[in-house]
Length: 306
Length: 316
Image 1: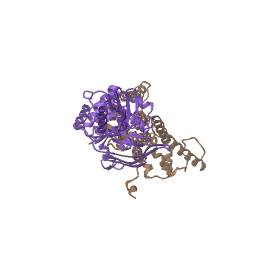
Image 2: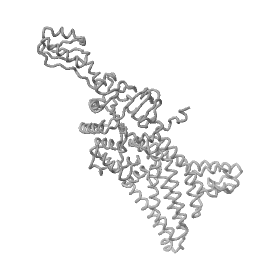
Image 3: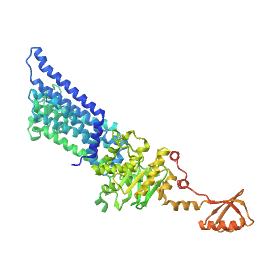
């Protein structure tokens, strides 16, 4: 099987870079310290203080480690991808790439894949620490697979946003700022808008205002709730709730809609949102490839012959 | 090999970079593209390389419409831009193999081809050096090797010797000489006009988006020299020397300065020889008899109206 040459070259360069080694070391050190500290709190501290060991604490460790991994994707992937094409442009290597036989789709996919590989390497390298929870139980192998799937799809989703803006905007700084802004909008603004609508609906129906994460009786967002399918944070919290039963307040919105009437999407939110984000990523990558093609504005052959 | 028909490209509303350019370059030709900064050379080269779309006109490479056969044409073209960067943490051989793989050349064949090209540009032995540590001159040679890694039929070299010191420039010139012997069709833009005249089979001078003159270097030089005065230095002048000059039907504008006479002579070399014979017969003793020769740079200045800027001069 032919490996994408851009991907192969980027991997070679990043493997030689001290930065990658330091990120790996830092990430795993942080996770290890956190894991050992959690073990100490759960067992040693409980025994020394004469308390019973609360094994459910270990599941909290899983939630927090998974949260760190997920947060890392949201923080690092934009930084890796937002400069992927604009960086080539700034280094004056893009023109040469565009004159080769490699398609623009191949170029953007190679860039995305190499950025994701670094993140997946981090996620996999943290697996032994994440697997500490197996010692106690409560988290299954399937749960770990779901977590890896989430990291993978989120990295593709966030990465494709980064690559898209990297093609669209000439400067890496502008592209990075725009990518982080877009992710902020996806995570915070979509939720804030729906929360505001939900609260207004709830208050209109005669409920009394009792704080932002309040579930109002008979208030439902209807189909607008599906806007949250593109919110990776909601996907993450949905996964955690299914795995360890953590009740994140932000899921009230989905719950209110579920109460109003169950349907396939609401019942399979985790997988449906991953598929939605993957589909958007496909469109973003196709758009990036089209934008990168210097001759994309040429008239079609059929148009020409008319 | 390359045919450009009525090519036009405008940047914004005011800058007409290329204006109805027509150009035909035959297989195996080494074509020198000359023009001041902003003449439209780089834009034309980029359009041919598929990096910019033209507003109007057609480009055919080896008979294929460049707009609709990009993949096939990219295999036929090797492009070396005027400014380019290299990747950090990549060795010379890896750099070459990376570009080979972008053309689908992999494994042993890629290595063989890369080593062959490195040898061609005299970079054998530098395979394990990191590309970002190389000097500008070596990077230029490496980029030339890179542009040939897929054995293209048409090489587009945009200012391959710009910014090089005299030694590196000489090395590049030698490489271009060798390149001519490979039989590839080459388009090269440069400000180093005397060197272009030496290595190119034909040249085109571009200004303000238009091709002002195009032809075989020797023909252009002959045409240019035809307008140059014939200068004669006399040790002695015979009684009929001046009459002989005045009676010659090819002689115009006789200017006498001490023992030198310069005339505008409109005849060819044979007629020049005839004049010399008649002057000697007239009793003149001549120590020097030659036509002043023009150079490409002078022609360039004539055509572009002396607009060659200071930046260009620094490149010469």
